[in-house]
Length: 217
Image 1 (tube, rainbow, N blue to C red):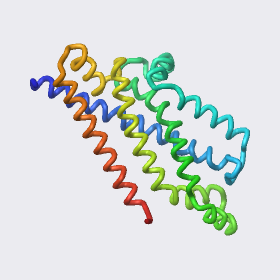
Image 2 (cartoon, rainbow, N blue to C red):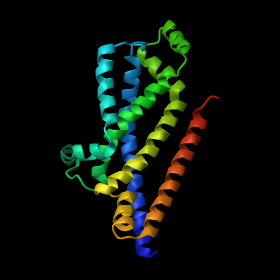
Image 3 (tube, rainbow, N blue to C red):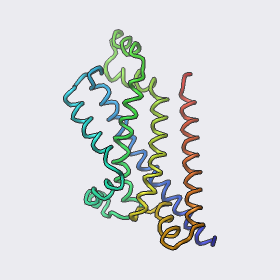
Image 4 (cartoon, one colour):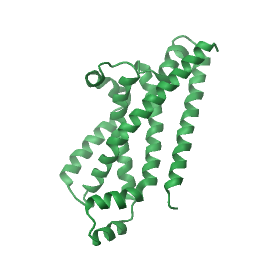
């Protein structure tokens, strides 16, 4: 493989890291509060709001049910409005974030449901406010599950970012399509696959380490 292709692979990897990193952070910034909201406003939550919960939950489910490749194309006008273009790594961050946020929200909600209800009741009996319960009981107790969920979300974003490359999103997916498929260079496709596997394994290992670090077990 030529040095030019190796440089292109390196640049594509950096683009993929950029897309996954930024969209993951933005998705978490939206998804974690959204997941907390869905949990606390559920029927058995600390501030039940069943109607609002059902409306928000339905919207979350609708976005989650749309295949990423369709979402990518469907929100092109919105992407152009936000970043001024629908092509490139920066543009790909918009649909990646929109896809990640509801996914993370549901994972966070599930993690919060695993928190011992006795801890919540104890905090309430001691006069803790809802904010205090969320910040000092729910989130700390659910943190291992939340971090595990975020790891799953980041790994899923790697696959989605590769899919974005098929429509000009840049990154390793774009490299694999343009060189490995369209130019019939199987060695490039193999290199892309190997790099993606190593990247995913690295993300998973880091996520597992973070979970062990915050786990009380």
